[in-house]
Image (cartoon, rainbow, N blue to C red; front, side, top):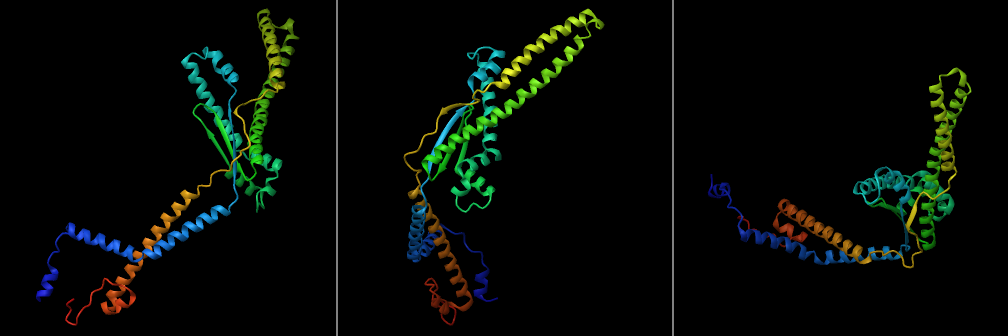
Length: 318
């Protein structure tokens, strides 16, 4: 074994602070050599991003906030548990409000509501390149944001190129929600009325056989008949009642200013991404040059632009 081979098999000392400084300097040197290409890439990316943002149409935003009917909540829960000053009642009302808000969101995001808005505002023609109704639904959902709060409020925010149409669509969302809610609650009221009327007919038929049933049972049937008559009248009133099922907290207004486009933030983000890509490209090029130098030799590698390669003499010394 020659001396050079023996030295090559000796363990290499651990890298000290000086070696780390050298490695960091080498990395910075790679970036410095590619500074002009990286800078050009950053400027180009930022310029293209700004131009794209400036050439896109402006959007206007309008929002409306609704809450469940407070009197209905108090009637449903407060009447059974006490006044609203009771903490238990307030907690129950809060939970019920959240549940109702979830139902409202499900109705607002339903396909039936979307189709009603598409037909009302002719969104197939308003939105460009909408060949299918499903595409219009997706665009409408993209332009609409529905948020809920812990207290049960629902906020519907609509963006559109036309500020008047943005406000009109936001209002239409609430009208459709009210219509669908009335339809669902009306169906429940109708079912309740039909059930009570059927039971009332059964009791009336049994009372016609008053002489054939015991006196005690007859008295029970009479009391039940009176109760069903009263409940049937109440069900008819509930079915015919045409009251709003929601309360508007903040109505929709026509926006005077368009939505901020975030030109500065997006331009800076594009520049950062371009810098990272340019740095990655510089290190990739350096790696390719170093790999080629190991294959072709140091003298030939200099032709490819690798200044870190030292001149090697015939005897192998640098």
